[in-house]
Each structure stands twice: as structure tokens, then as C-alpha cells.
Length: 353
Image (cartoon, rainbow, N blue to C red; front, side, top):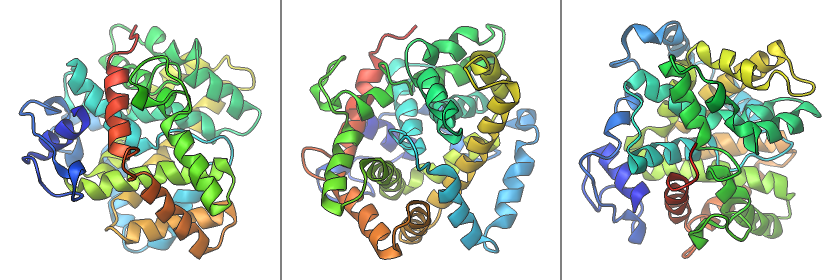
């Protein structure tokens, strides 16, 4: 299993290490898996001069911890989890898929700093959901669907390793044959592309909406946040929250320039709108990663409280929805890890340009 092997090798442990009990804890280690990505969870280590002002942003996050916890967690959910069109996998799921696809395909970006650009790219198409309607829908289609999803790859400078690394991560996300296709449109368990629907997250969200009496768009977001929490809690050594925070904090200044070239011509967009929307997404991703970094139990409670405010639910109802989402994603025959593993294999074998 590619994903389980890759995660275990990243953690440097053998089969049967920490995690869920039962069949999903039997993870075989591969010595070379995720070697190219291994240092990105360690913050500033190994990144050298390329960190630029990202290190200052990281310092600011670290000094804020402990004294503005409630504000951070509430803001996290109000800023990052949109009430409109639902993303597919959460940012944690996209980053894990990208790491495993890199291992499966033998992709190499050349340095730890470039790995962070690729992982930021894996989450970044959801920048679109930070815009207001009608731009939100227009950007969402341009950034996820044919033909616009290829724009950063096609327009990235061949002389910029930063832009090429970011664009590679971006490609893993798309809704044509990438990770979002198997969350929204095609069932990854079919093992083919194209595949009959619905996608894994859409199918789980429909079940959650029915059982909890909430709209499917809201249920969709509970499922994606639930999967990110499960990944972080089952594999604590992966430090998924820190990884997301680092990817946002160390995003290179060339990235928004590439996005402007790619999408400023979308109706209703423009240079400064694209830059402002990307910055809002970036800051939200850093705070989201901070939330995932909290101890198990505290992270669930904080996300549930923030989502309650965002969706007008009581705290108890929101906590019940999040718990139900996590339970649905661990059901036999529909386990989230199996869905992610299938997605990794299909994306790795997709029609890459």
C-alpha cells in the first residue's frame, strides 16, 4: 500500500507501529520512501538562505501560541472553512497525496525548500474558495477543471525551479484526473480513470448529511476536516499540522506572480485580487496547520467550536457532526486510508503533461 508504506517510511518505523489498531496499522516501511521530502516537517532545518521572510512569520506564529489560543482557533475556522462551494480533500489530505505520489512516481524537486513549494502547490488550487461570488465559481472552475488547471504548469518558467516545483504540486490537485476527481466525481475504489461516481468525499458527505440532518455542503467540510484530523492523529510523527504551517510560511514570492500570470484574466479577477485571495488562503492555511498541531481532543474541540460558529450550529451538534464524519471515514470497506491509497495510485498513473 503506497500511502501506508510512504507514511511509515517518513516516520522511520516498522510495520505495526503507533496508530490505529486493526488492519490499518499494518504498515510496511520502504527505506527510500519520501526521502526527498523528509526534512520539510522540521521547520527551518536545512532550508538556509531561501527561507527569506518566512522565518519571521514562523517566529510570529510561535510567539502567539498560548496567549491567543481561543482567537486563533475561532479565526481558523471562520477564515479557512468556506460556507459556499465545498473543497474536496482537505489541505492535509492533498499534501499527503502529493508526498505519496512523489514517491510512487520517483519525482524529485531537488531540495527541502522546493519540496515546501510543491506541497503548498498541492493545497493551493483551493485559493479559489476564498473569493466572493461570482468570482469564486469562476476561479474554482479555472483552477480545478479543464483547461485552466494546467495554467501554472504551462506558464511556469523553465528556468525557475521554484515555479516548477509549485506547479508540480498544483497538478496533483486537479478535478480532471487528480486528487479532487476521486473526492468529487469518480469512486477511487473502482481503480480506473474515468470512474463511475460519486467520489469518496461526496459519498461520505451524503451519508453524514442524511444521518445528521445538515446540508451536504456543510457535511462535505466536516468530512474533509475529519480526514485531516484522522491523518494527524493516526500518524503523529508525520507532524501534518506543522507541515501545512511550514508550507504556508515558506511559500516563495514567485508563487503569487505565477498565479497572476495564470489567472488574472479570469472574468472578475485581476492582478491585485489574485494576490489578495492567495494571501488570505496562505494565512488561513498556516492557522489551520497550527490547529492540527494541537493535542488530540483539543484539536477536535477547537475545530468543532469554530465550525459551529461558521455554520450556525450549537457546539454539541458540531461536535457530533465531526465525530460522525470521522466514524464514517473509518468504516470497513470505505476507510479513508484505503481511499487515499487508491487515489495516490490513480493520480500517479494519470495523464501527466
